[in-house]
Amino acid sequence: MNPPVTDDYLEYPQRRYGMDHDRYDWSPLPQRKPVAWPGDARIALWVVPALEWFPLDMKGQPFKPPGAMQTAYPDLRHYTLRDYGNRVGIFRIMQALEARGVPASVAVNAAVAVRYPSLIKACVARGWEVIANGLDMDHLHHGGLSEADERQWIAQTLQILRQASGQAVRGWLSPAKSESMHTPDLLAEAGVDYVCDWVNDDMPYAMRTRAGALHAMPHPVDIDDYTILVQNHHTEDDFRDALIDQFDLLYRESSPGDGRVMAISLHPWVIGQPYRISALEEALDHILRHRGVWAATGSQILEAWKSNHP
Image (tube, rainbow, N blue to C red; front, side, top):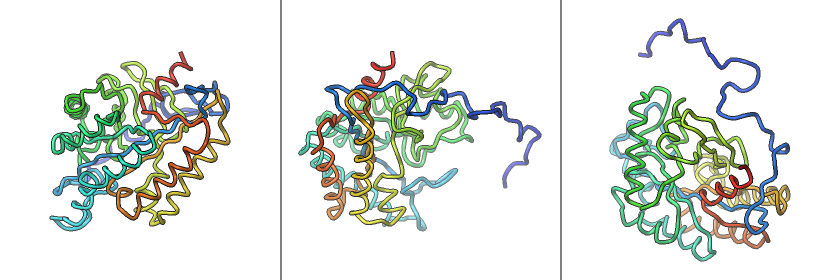
């Protein structure tokens, strides 16, 4: 049973003309200072596979994240399909990117680092950047979570991933992109530099927190493999074409000295299937045939952006 509504339910201190928060200033993209990528590149190509762990007995609270278990316990059909990504699919993505000289920023549940330490070593050996992706896909950050508990989850996640990878772990992607009102503050306090949960831009931008600056990185959900292939039931050709169409328009909008970010979000249990991986390979080949494409990690892209916004 839901708790009764209190008298302050309709009180909202940020209710005013304009945005309903003060995390950042309103900033239409055409009015911003142009961003120059290294080597006069027009497009920063940012590939972000996600290594996720879905507990077999997941509670799915306060909602089921994308990819959650669907049937009665034990839902081995969906559990083992998700696990396919960590056992098989990720290595096909590795091969596709390595063959094309494209680094990745891999979003990792801390539970993956605990259960598959060799997988983290394989990512690090390829020069991939590790991004924190929460404890696991059943630990969702949300408004009903206490600030103390959320702070502890973030600290535990970062401690595990920093130790496993030997990296600073500067980026964060919340499971299911779900946040509480405190998440940006707690991430900045924990030493995180950028977050991938906000999908309102094609470029990085600075956010305000009580612990200083945090940056939002463009990490779209509408063109990722799960959304197109699983949620929307489109074909592999549709996924390839969506990536190509996304790139082509960003490329036309950009120029040397006025760059854009082309972010590709991947789930190895989806795109890593034998009959699907060619869709990713064909899209990457199309992108890389163009002049002025800079394949980079999230931290590299952020540092280049910050150099244009001292």
